[in-house]
Image (cartoon, rainbow, N blue to C red):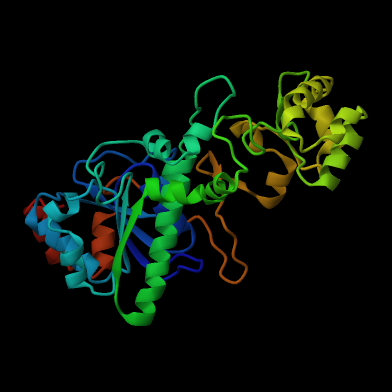
Length: 376
């Protein structure tokens, strides 16, 4: 049993990609016992598959009725079932919500899709870049004159998907503990990513937001909220919004030109950005760090993934740890009453079938029979 606030919670995770594994990783990091259900014959288990860490794997032939019955016996003991197939797939397997909740009325049935369980696009294929295209987020990210730039797959898969699924399932788990009734959690990445845009919808309604990129405070339009190239070709970030932080930026960067008095005059932003760019290019990134890092300017160097490991702040907090020679993010958030921990490296696909079934109450004869029937 893992440590953390979810210690004792049992999760069945149907193997998938992207947001599903990341969500299950978070639950495992917080102490849940996560059993990943892989398809029989699946390959996997690389130590580099960081989001697969901290759970055990069983392999089942989900086209075999005995394998489906095996899942339902596991369901009887589980608190959460998590799946990320297209709408209707679980129903066709005989593992839809009605069947599962019939076997365990308290279970939380978490569903992850891009478009949701219904709607005109529900059955279409898609990826993060497509889902966030409908939210306004992708349109708002990118250079002034160029095309929108994908913010990795952070906004749809992980922010709007995995985190909303985790939050939703844990809220439903809390409800089930109080009422004895489980429920379905329909997590659509389009819904979650749109929810992440809530503040900007408010900005738009109030007249504080323009659709054109680089015309707004938080999209790179403001000279005091952007990234700047240094003399060594590396970059730093500035976020000096508040007047006192902006005043400190002016002091530390030597911005004595009275033109900088017009901080919030959007008409002046392009000229002020050009002037500030010239100043920031006068020193290396490390030189600017010596001057600004740790102050109230709201400053940070723009680090590559590799550089994050050795940054003093990250090192002091052990924000990145190493498992089997693979550097990876540590658990987040941190709990001081029920500390979390990474429960182990990624499993081999199907590598724990006998162990898991035994621990969940299957006899050796049961397991042998399932092997004979080629269900596992």
